[in-house]
Length: 403
Ligand SMILES: CC(C)(COP(=O)(O)OP(=O)(O)OC[C@H]1O[C@@H](n2cnc3c(N)ncnc32)[C@H](O)[C@@H]1OP(=O)(O)O)[C@@H](O)C(=O)NCCC(=O)NCCS
Image 1 (tube, helix red, strand yellow):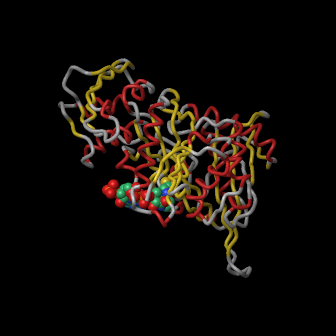
Image 2 (spheres, helix red, strand yellow):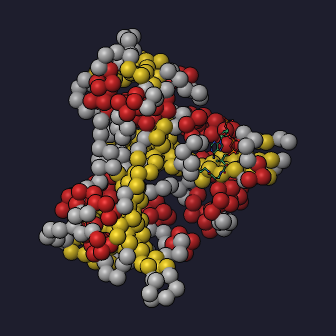
Image 3 (tube, protein in one colour):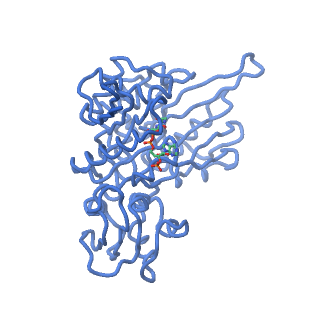
């Protein structure tokens, strides 16, 4: 049987390749779905595997920019990866990942990032767990946020959301590693899209805008879901899609609003960063029922360009040795970071890491000390781990959306 890996050539191939992951959601993409999706993910970024001419697997890469400490970098946002069950465990994922990574490098994107359906899959392709996210499942009647409001709230329509929400998201996303730089198309096609299949049993998307002195300073996107068959066992849940404030006071107001909505039993929210103020804002943290989950995975595709593409805290110096990279031997070796510049090192390394552990540390979300404790990094010179952490530290990464 002859398998062939290549990128798709037209909308119909794109639609069928999308259907490989669609299979696992019970979703058969239509031409309209494929058209919308391909406005963000061009055909040349969608790999497929063909079995005797029939597409049986797909893997895409959004070309977007991702906030990294101190700036933003071109990033391949790996998405819609699927192999039909008729073809599982015959190496098709590996063939697609190899072709995709080679393509990412050739395009000059120094990093790739993804959300993993299962944590056991992507380490073999050089991805490292780069951030953890908080999930909440709050009991509405048991948690409160005290204090005075500084904003007013309006429920707005899609057009107004499209105009005003980016004015909140933009400043937040600029300083938070892990956030995607969103285009108007991205807002329309992903964040504000309210197609029935996105509701998953809940009601329409609610768009709440928070203003201070007439300016947008926060927003919440959420849906209401109801379960139970009689008034006695009705359960009403707010499913928060995302919620932001441009400053601490606005963030407090957004969350106070969500936690106070009447006649609601629970509030669910996902993928909050580990340093989100919510656990300290509420009076009863345990009633949030916090869970920690894996979030963004990062692959450093071009080590020197990626390292030079982020900023560092302070003006120290550290030398990292990348000990292995199963795809790009040119990444292996020692690299000195000093005053924001990166060069091949002549000196002894401070820290040794395989490329996937460098992916974990890259956004500043997982300290080298934790990687060392877990056996994923090795201190090569005394104090090296502390020196590396002093430079790499950054606000906890936050990617509020599964892409
Ligand atoms: C996950 C999936 C893409 C794997 O595809 P596949 O073609 O069966 O994978 P391959 O045969 O290329 O396997 C490559 C390696 O990954 C391993 N692997 C594959 N899927 C795995 C999983 N779910 N958990 C752990 N290991 C896995 C294989 O054992 C193999 O290991 P090896 O290199 O040590 O031999 C496929 O099962 C699938 O479509 N799953 C449902 C959708 C999904 O989860 N997509 C990922 C979205 S992020």
